[in-house]
Image (tube, rainbow, N blue to C red; front, top):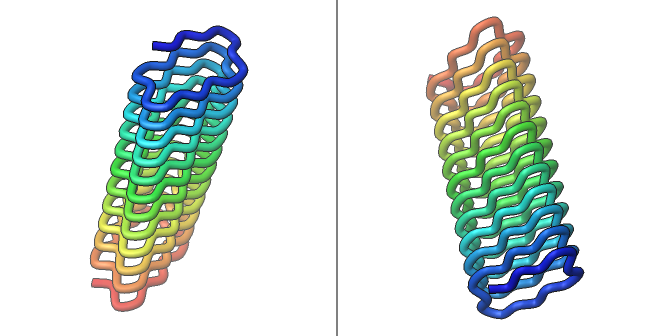
Length: 192
């Protein structure tokens, strides 16, 4: 256990728990739990849980759970769960669940579930489910289900189901089902 107030740099290999208030940089390999308030940079390989309030950058490989309030950038490879409020950029490869409120950009490859309120841009390849309220742009290749309220632009290739209320533009190639209320433009090739 390492506890530090206003510590500028903590480096730890296989450390079990690190708690830090206003810590500027934490680097940890195979750390089990990192909790940080107003931490500027956290880098962690195979960290099990990272909790951060107003953290500016979190980079994590095969991290199981990342929770961040007002985090500016989160990058995660094969992270199981990422929860972020007012996060500006989340990049995730093969992430299982991403939940984001007022997130500006989410990029995800083979992400299983993305939930976003007032998210400005979501880009997803082979994402299984995307749910978005007042999302400005959603781009998805081979996405199974997209649900969007007041979404401005949805582009989807071989998407199985798209449901949209008051969506301005939906473009879909070989989409199986499209339901839209008061949609301004729908373009679909070989849609069932």
